Image 1: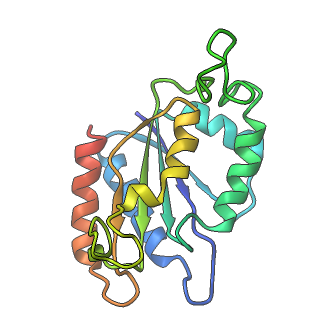
Image 2: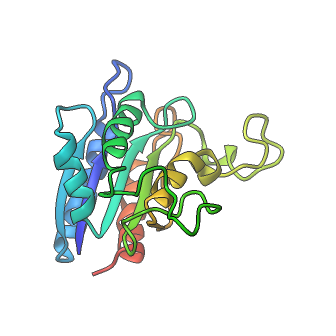
Image 3: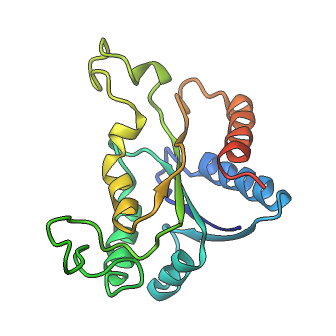
Length: 194
């Protein structure tokens, strides 16, 4: 299988990106050992828009490894999406505004990456207890995937299917890196396999 791993981290002095880079290393070594072919992209470095489109077309599965920044992806990841995904609207990733003639009443049905999958791998400073709990002040019962609905919709716009999201929690105040490593390897084995 061909897998593209996108590093969605943007450098901040208080968040240098070591954890996301480490999780990408784990994904790369785990998936390579299973025989998968891996390519990488990083939104915080120079990238060529056309090459990024080609990587999306090449991949069977795309993994977005990203910190959660103000309840979403970093501004560099959003910039990457704006540049790469907009350029891909000429048919490489989707057809125009996402409509096919004959199904114009079904917005978002113009994706051209049918049969491909994607997975979100996220690092949260929020504790796990903040999610899926109606008693929590901020999220009021919403889960990790609720917070990332716009990102899921972007991939769905390309007609890609979701794999189960992976998340690390409380990464700044109460990190559990060793446990996260084990969970992530198991998650990759279960979701992607050999």
